[in-house]
Image (cartoon, rainbow, N blue to C red; front, side, top):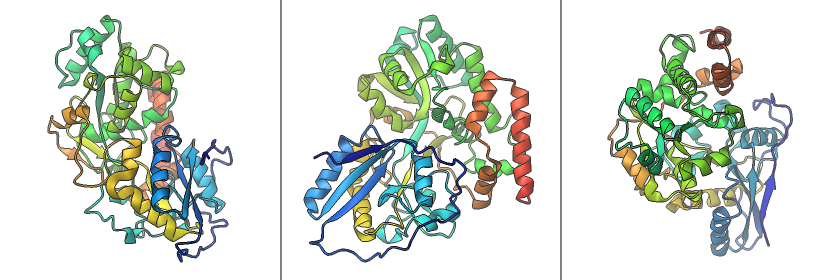
Length: 417
């Protein structure tokens, strides 16, 4: 019997605040007896894996724990959906921490999981699952190195024999690709979320400046200055668009079609995390044709985490939920099911493209955790830098810069900065 439920995003009040606790009753954390039948709901944004490898993973757990049944919910628009369900006290037993939630709210909706043993010495990006009270509520689910992921056959078609080291070399290679009839670079502009690497997540800015504390330091000046990291990021894509090095019709881009086009060599490059490498292979690219190199001109190599998973405070089976969460992380059961880099320190990287990236021996940059007061400035400003980037590429740049600098200044002033 199929045990996977798919739900679509819930279009409720988008401004629902995570700080309002509604219906999150305290749950009894006592465990059930081994003979008692327990059903746990495990929610994930990995809709592409819910019916296949994640289901297989859950089946293995059920086999070893016959009193446990795991139901999987594949959630689209996971952030907003989980925020809504958190406020209603209806979170799944094991699920992701909403990325837009304030760290001060983690303890309202999730239980302390520090007893599971995944300390800062054992897991990358520990801070991402830590509340501002210093309690661990979530486990980082993966590691991802960022870089330019390219199709080697596309490079071969354009006569490119080595990867670029500087931006000048990069733009020259883009022209060679364009001349060869290949789309040099994929942005996934319309889907918007892939723009986070340039915008909301500030990864391009962090790599180009080498500043692991870029987000916290950003409040010391305007959001956009003459040549700060964020301006460099936005200007990079603007130049790529102006030179015709990106998709010819940005408003018709589609993530699923992009993956096929990138795998086939119709599109040569993109700037993403190493989490994407398995998806390129799944869409038909041969492993030997997938490569990855550092962002040209970058001062460091970004290493970041992914979604964090935790145990809901409203769960009636917190012990069983914590046991299942611990099992998924021990032995990398979860990451083996979804693909990507292990969140556990000491793990070996096996992907050949990732090995190529790391062979460049760039200084690894693990971003500093965003301070609560800085995080609140961004959230209270209601600034969406992904939307800003879209406007920057399609409208008047100076108007966009002024609008968002003004919003940022107002939010800082309200916070007393």
